[in-house]
Image (cartoon, rainbow, N blue to C red; front, side, top):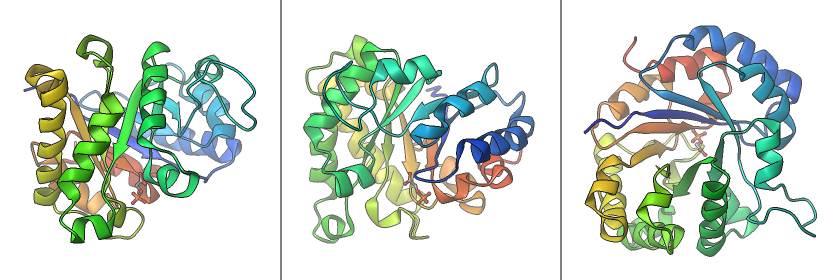
Length: 253
Ligand code: PGA
């Protein structure tokens, strides 16, 4: 199975446009010519235009952390896929747990946003993951199956082809508690199994599943050496160019 890994940076609500450009001028030379993995950065909305311009012609994709599912309309404060494409975005983060927890994003909205991303050729990275209480209550499998099945409902395999899923256990995000490679692999197998049930085994075998939650330069190698883990979604450790480049080059290339 040859799944090209994706290493992605989620900058959350950090970095002004000038800071985003400063990061890229340090980061791009560090990863120039790196082709083993795909690289993506998700800056905040106000930095997208300058980040996309700074990354133009490089091996780094730029995308938003959120978008609305309609092309346009009376949706105060929202951003549409055509607007993001016009800024130079080529990828999109969908359903991050912070959006689900703090902004009421539901599985149904995640599905609508995924349909919209595919329609506009934005590489969709759909986030799923259980809370600490759900894990302790032995509900991890049920939660992951529900989030995955509802995210992809009504989308056929041909249309869903670019899909990437990020497994991010909520209890590991920003806490310094990382899932072990074995725990992540167990979750990825559940996710891959659910995708196989709905979109077929072949689709599932080719699906990139990223792990996210306190990925750092010193645990990236162990995580990425687990065959079920096809990349990483990195928050805190992606804010520094050297730190993120070390994660991108996880086996010390
Ligand atoms: P973290 O965040 O790496 O800071 O835990 C990951 C994420 O929220 O995507």
